[in-house]
Length: 78
Image (tube, rainbow, N blue to C red; front, side, top):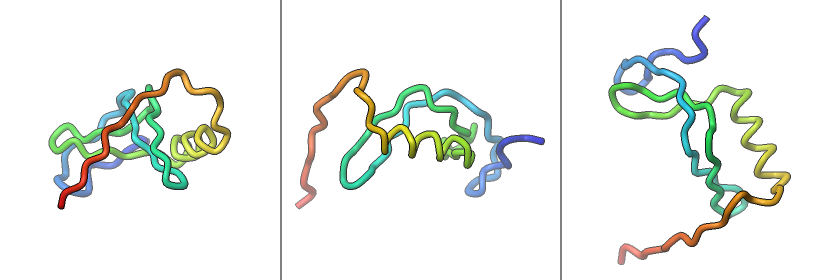
């Protein structure tokens, strides 16, 4: 059984890759590296398995010492 179905947006094949994931929790942005993510080969849409989503949630809730911290510019559209 494949861990990912075809893309629901374009029908492209979804393959697993280790990617960087932006995750928001209680208004705070976390960047998590080397996350196993399903990525559509045609449109780039990303998918998480339930197991990966739980792992990411646990990482963010525990908020262990981060590997690094980066400044993120915030812009206003108006």
